Length: 618
Image (tube, rainbow, N blue to C red):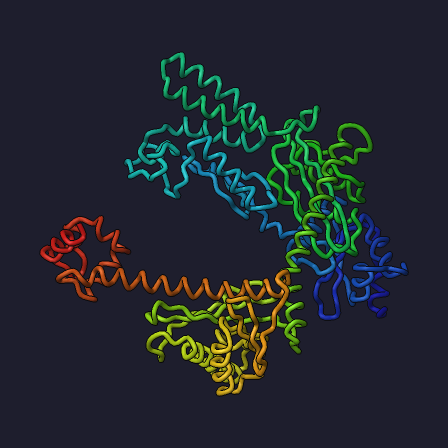
């Protein structure tokens, strides 16, 4: 330990605050809070036998700083904010708070909307969340849209404005059409209040109000309105039926459980509102082998609730944490009411935590099983393929090529890329055959392989001169393995082009569709893999993907050409007019729907040609 560090440790104050550990490059590697900085920080350097992540962190500490606070709660808040800002290497990090999805009700507008957002701002809008998945947010918003005619457009609508043209949602009964002035601001705001109560989990309160409104509508002989309200009531009743009663205490609770196995931790959360389970979230934390479960729970409480739009009255956890009282006080101040973090040992609440723990365990085991299957069919299959084909290098990047044409017309080719056994679609490339006339798959394959590697070599030369990485080119990254769709003929054509360019050191094999035989250079007999082989299944997937990509490109060219031929067959329509028409109307269908007046206004058109075009297209 340096003299400077030793002096700083001796002079640490016996006060609450936050300590910031740095490495020899001045990077922040750990942030923590302490009731007594003197006792906590010294403990790292005076204790022996630190293991795992703590041991690695202490070994890398070259310096530290600290910030004094007036209380433990202030230290906790500052620690949470600094971790969020710096994302230190040795802290337990969950998904960055700014990435958690929330539901936003734009109550700052006269006619509010419901949106998904990942940022909470201090504005006049209301936020609900955080949710741990965007899918849960989208599903909730869809349910609300079915129940309440909330507008979805992004227009700025004010009461008393000039009526505007409504969108499709108005005509299908999913919006009241405030843009038309059809709904008073007061009535719309009343509906938004119901939406907010629904999001708070107070569906039964919403139900009672709707039942009252339905009765009033029926009494006033407004039967259509009463029927609409009845449908909403039935939909909410169905939702309530599916919500399991979890607690007889009828309070708002979050029930958290964490289950660890090897290097992963499963998190299960039950959101209980007024005693009913309204939703559940779960996800996996990676690289937690060196973490104690208590530390994971402690960090989760700080990070998840630090930016939460709603804090329940009770948070139930499976194990006590060191900062429980400070976190309780902090969350109580944020909520404006007393918040309790409880560790139940018996009774109803204990059973709820155990149920969450059981679900967390099951989810992690299912996740691991799925991960094992995914590994077997991707990277594991590539490892198996390396052995089966006797490859010197693991085929991290595989490229497959296929030719597509119909009786030699509009020949195209595809290049698809798999990385570690998975499709890398951004790396896909497609080609139009330029030098081959008619149907000659061998010559077409030779052309495409030559063009692919010629471009790659040219890019490599340029990138080397510019001092740039090969990943910045479109063709500069070369594969570890090439798969040619076809037998000996296609393989021979590909090899001839590769020899010509001096890249024939790359392993290349032909995969014949019949019997899935694998042909290699210099071997008369094909390689046959077992039908249940993961390696064979991977080859089939990459071959089929190359075939699909080529066929899709070929089909798009045929469609484009047939569209052009339809227009160019019309008297008075040449390439220039066709281009302008497609630019304005987008397609032949769009042109067909246009009026003579609209067609005549297109650049290069006149009324006479427009009339002929309209008559021709019917």
